[in-house]
Length: 290
Ligand SMILES: Nc1ncnc2c1ncn2[C@@H]1O[C@H](COP(=O)(O)OP(=O)(O)OP(=O)(O)O)[C@@H](O)[C@H]1O
Ligand SMILES: [Mg+2]
Image (tube, rainbow, N blue to C red; front, side, top):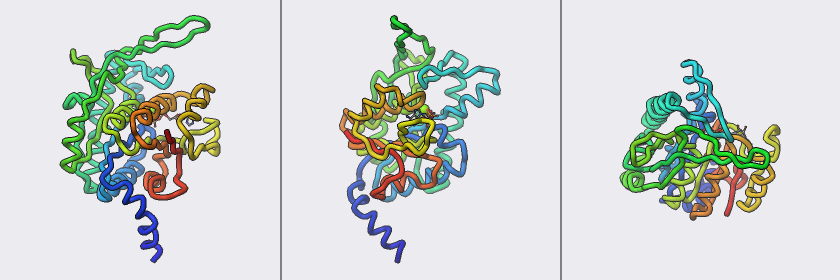
């Protein structure tokens, strides 16, 4: 009886979500453990059979760093973005497309989901350009060369629409080219935010390794459960969002300013965090509203 009541409780959410598109970003830190990934994918397969059209975008930071170290390369970050020389770019592409993307697709197949793996290159989904990074150094503004770190020039969501309409679950890696064929490493949060905007998704959901947005990054108890975009912008200005949280903020900003209804940041290492966040009133992570 309890199980039945749970289902009935979820009914209003199921009704609201049926037929909608949701973009789910799985962070590299939320997939270091295969069992955790398996649970996450199971949740997404459940969403699919409830009538939601999921689009998965993944990162792979820890696996890239691990591989680089094995090859004797030193990972370096500026404001949460990986400095990417030519050699690093080759490792990034190898790890993201050859390993992480393929592992996610395999995990979907094992759990009954018809997943299709693609990078931003495929079907010209993401057209990239070199990212120009400006930083303040004392009084002056300097341009930092991040190498083959790209940003989105534009998104062609056509390939995703074709896949979604035909019942496939797209799994996207954040590797893309410019129109000259130069390959770039993009931040997966930003790609997820842009794709959510291009598809006018109902939600952008980001799975990471912290409970959500914290007012004190050192204190996991300082979770913000619900926040308006304007308040989040104030948090960004105050410098509370650091490192990997900065591109998440950018992604949320772009998504919510372009018609996405809500953004969620949740702990992907906690079992069934997606289902708790989506189908219960309390939720588990941070929900950002326009
Ligand atoms: N105010 C904050 N609240 C929560 N986390 C924060 C905050 N400021 C910085 N962070 C950091 O952001 C990190 C999450 O971003 P990170 O880029 O490391 O992971 P990810 O995006 O999930 O994975 P990947 O980059 O591999 O896709 C957290 O582990 C936390 O240390
Ligand atoms: Mg990140």
